[in-house]
Image (cartoon, rainbow, N blue to C red):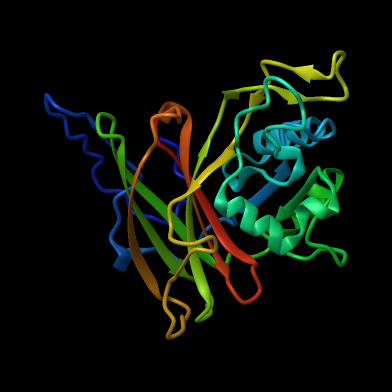
Length: 282
């Protein structure tokens, strides 16, 4: 099992099995009183895209290269939204709607569709006066964030019942610096390896019927589009939180290619403090 941070003491990994279900228990068990105050930064790259965007596969390939290079220090979410995600504009084969309520709301806020795809956001931070970045600049800004000291640590533990498709999620947080009363926890589901058409202007013909879509945003698990408040009374360095969520993975999603992503963002600035990802299956 890949552990994204090395600041936790590991207890037992247990698997509960019955004749009716198989529970997969993942993530490390921890004693929150013994967390070591050290962690890596985990950067969130949100890749704005759509299956009708013929220039977007170049950005997809860049995201894949960066994900391979930075490994567990980079979480990628591909978000279909706007006109390029239309199910009617691009002819037969593009009928599947990959948009989400959360993705559309975040797009509307940052005006990603209006800026033109492909674009990406690195921790929703402003670099060189912009939040929406061209994919050629992603690596530079990702490296900049990774060079900074982490503000907090996040760990995800999941228990998945493959029969009911219910997943129980525990997100453990520890702040290394003071947080904000407007900090929100966002938990969402992404799916990888979805085979579906994609426009690609580097190919002839430019419609690829069996394109493999990666790390696609599928649904928000937390309530609302911007997450849920962690502590409206304010957060200090050293504060720890245990947050629990439950979700049923829809039958239309391939659970063997799904992952849980959690991140903390300041709702006042929208900037992301830290992120984490945990596969439903290893």
